[in-house]
Image 1 (tube, rainbow, N blue to C red):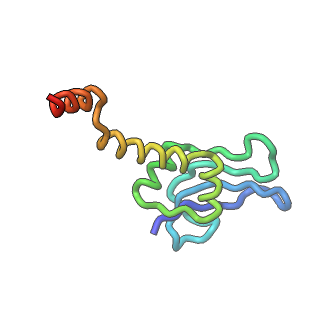
Image 2 (cartoon, rainbow, N blue to C red):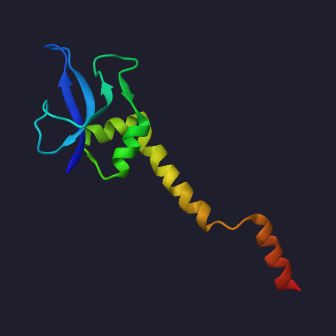
Amino acid sequence: MVKIRLRRVGRKNAPFYRILVADSQSPRDGKFIEIIGQYAPRQSEGSLQVNEERANYWLGVGAQPTDTVRSLLRRAGILKRRHEQRLGIQLKTTAVPVSEQTDEAATTRA
């Protein structure tokens, strides 16, 4: 199974994490497929950077984020935009244009 998870880098007492896609069997700091972002918990600004396009791609092909990565993606707004985009596509396909609704109402009255 493919996971989206954190890999710790940085010096002692100054953690810095890379958000990456890896096989679930590989060790935490071992082999990986792709780096899609980074997270620096000790910085106040710019501590979270994620490539949204690649994150959406990997989520789309079935990669499972860990709990921590899921919360980071939520904080970055990626999961919300992904959810709204998926709902928007479904709502557009079932929606009937207003012009067609008024034409149907006029024909049923006559």
